[in-house]
Image (cartoon, rainbow over all chains, first blue to last red; front, top):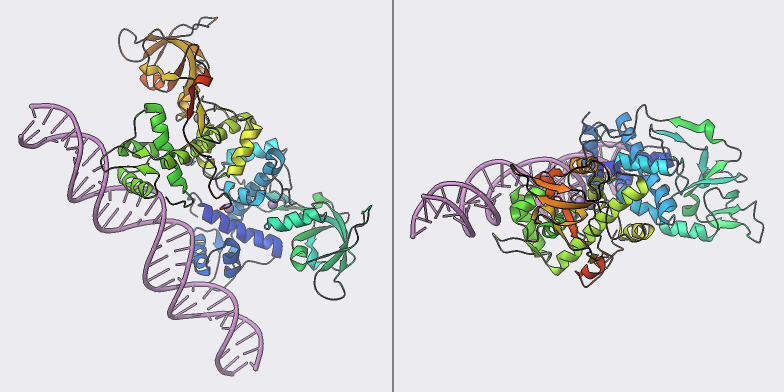
Length: 251
Length: 251
DNA sequence: TCTATTATTTCGGTGTACCTAAACTTTGAA
DNA sequence: TTCAAAGTTTAGGTACACCGAAATAATAGA
Ligand SMILES: [Mn+2]
Ligand SMILES: [Mn+2]
Ligand SMILES: [Mn+2]
Ligand SMILES: [Mn+2]
C-alpha cells in the first residue's frame, strides 16, 4: 500500500526474488534469498516481514516468498534498469561482458527514470542485454524466445544459446575462451560415459572444434532456444502499468 | 589514517567542505555545512568528529573546518566525478544544463573509478563542466583561468563568464533566457542609482540587448575571467597523488 | 566589562539494515 | 511414528546517519 521511496536494499530483495523464479520457475525460499544477497537468514526474515507490510510480497512463516503485483512491478523496473545499464556499458563505454554486472548492480539504484529512458532511446530500445537476458519495456512487457536451461534438455536438441548467467565473471571469460556466446549454435549430446558434465557439439564449426564437455555449473548457466522459435510468439504481459516511479519529483 | 570504504555521506561532507572554499576562499563553518547539506547542526558536529577520527579534516571545537591532505584528495576525486558526470549527461545523453546537477549528485557515489576514466576518455578528458567548473584531472590537478565573482568586481571590468553556480536549476534557466552562459562576454557597470543589484552590459551585442540589472543572488552566482587571462598560467597542483581509490577491487 | 545573542556541541533517541545465538517449525530417514 | 537435522524466525545487539532539545562556548553591543 505504502509508496515510500524504496531503499536500495528493498530494490535488491525484490529483484532477487523475481530473478530466482525467472531461472528456477519456483518461488524462492528464505535461505536461498539470503545466499543470493550475501546476508544472514535472520536478516531475510526481518526484511521479508517489512516487504510484506509494504505489500511487495506474500509470505506465510516457513513458506516460500512470492511477489505481489506491486512487487512484480518494482522487480521488473529494477530488472529493466540493470539490463539496460549493462547493455549501455558494453555498447557505449567499451566494457566487456564480464565487467558490467557489478557496475550495474550499484548504478541501478542511483539513476533516475529519466536517465533510464534516455539510455534506452540512445540504444534503440534493445530487448536483450549482453548476456541475452530479456529487457522489460517501459510497460513491463518481456519478449523472449522460448528456451530451456541446458541441464534440463534431453540429448539431441540443437539450437542457439539464448541467455547466459552473468553472475560469475570468471565463467563468462571461460565461455568466451571456448567460443560460447549469445546466439552460438550448438547441439546437446548428453552425459559423457563416466563422470559428470554435459557433452555438446558445434554443428556450424568449420575448423577442428570437436565436441566439448561442460561442467554441471556451466551447463546450468546456459539457456538454449528451440530451433526455429520466433520471438513474437512469446510476449509475456507481466504488469498492467508503467514501470516509472509514481512520484518522479521525489529525487 | 583508516582506509575504510567511504560512505556517500562522508563523500558529500568532504566535497561540500572543499566546494565552499572554492567559492568563498575561507574555510566553512559548522552551520554553513549543515545548511548546504540540508541536515541539522548537531548532525554536522557528530560527522565532523568522525571525519577528524578518519584523518579527513582538521578541526578544533567551535572553529571552522579544514580538509587535511587526505581529505582534499577525496574531495577532488568527488568533484572530478561530479563534474565529469555532468559533462557526460549533457554531451552524451542530451540533458540540459539545469537537469544534470541532481542526477550527478547521486551517480557520483555509485560509479566505479573504471567508469569515470572511461567517461573521461570518451569525452576527450574535458577540463570544464557545463557550468564552467574546472574538472580536476586524474592526478588532482586543476586548470582554470583566474576569475572573480561578479559581486566582488569593481565597475568597468570586461571579460567572459567563466563559471556559473549550478545549484539552482531555476537560476540556470533564467540565465539561459536572458542570454548568459559560459564564455558570454560582458562588462560590469556597477550598482544602479537606487536599490540593489548589479548592472551589466553586453559589449558584443549586435541587436537591441541593452544593459541588464542582475539581482545580488545572480551576481554572486557568476564568475568573470579577466580579459586576456590564459589558462596555462593557472594550473594548481593540489595533491601529490592519484585520485583512484586505493583498493579498487573493493567494489 | 558584562551580558544577550548566536554558534556549536552534547545528550538522548529514532529508523534502517545488518549480525550471532537461541528458539522454534518442518521434514524426512529410520 | 518418531525425532534429529535442516530450515526459519525471534531475541538481543551493533553501526550508521540522522533528529530535537539542552548545555555550553564565542562574540559583539552597551
Ligand atoms: Mn543492486
Ligand atoms: Mn545481464
Ligand atoms: Mn552526492
Ligand atoms: Mn557543475
